Length: 366
Image 1: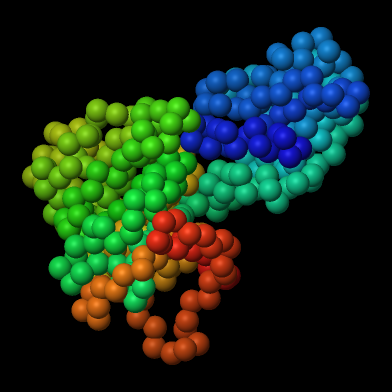
Image 2 (image 1 turned 45 degrees about the vertical axis):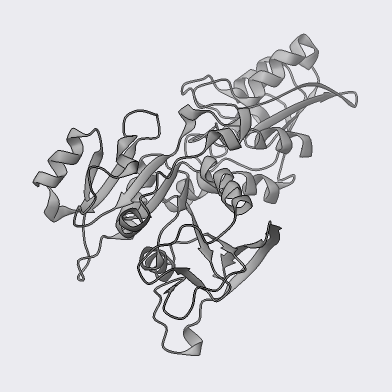
């Protein structure tokens, strides 16, 4: 199963919006076939493994990181393929929560007389696909907030300028996080101050990432203040990772919206709360409906603080540089907390060094 998990991880950049899945066929203690789901619409992991094993699959044990599908989508049902191959046993890391599968693949295998075991290395299997599982189970993407800060907890100068706090090693690591994400979200403030492209620099990741796999880039801009000359818009329509602007309902039919759509940018209109702020939960549910699994957030203190305050953060990645920006610089989050009891508890999951920077991976304590 560990081998199957390792295979599945190879598809972390390419399988989206499908989950990463690996399969290993074993017979008489020897691996006779293996594979992983490489791209949505392509063969599933079980198909690759069965093709490699051929007729030798008869009587083998299949180790699969996710329950074999039992429905026909863009490919045929893998549970049926395993039955036809006459495997004798299937070991599954975890049941698939997707309602068209959700136990049906297991039932099909058992009905055919195949021994099935579920729950081997399940925690690791869930860790492979946090976005897919969160989208199915919570109707929103899995949300990662990435921040860069100085040693004194500041993210930008008072002017809003923030490039560059951290070093090249940290910025290269961010490319990996961007690449595995279905979409990258930022706020209009970051666009106005830093004019980012928010692309994955594919040359830094090698052949594992293709330009066609660029994530969707999303900008929250309630008043449509973005300039048509912004770097992020100059790429619209040229690569698969297009641009989506989420604005407020009052901007529907506006000249700014029509001008942006004329550039090939998609504009959608979100409801706002009593303060005139875009409804973030509505946005997350809309993104889930668009099959966005992992959402990578690179934003300023205002949007990052709002997401944290509303419980819309599953992982916080902070790169801390060994520099001081001073007391007039901007804080990490706009998160007004009045009492010590209001503090946000975080669990440290990982800590490592990138050049002179430190990277913290934290998860909110629920």
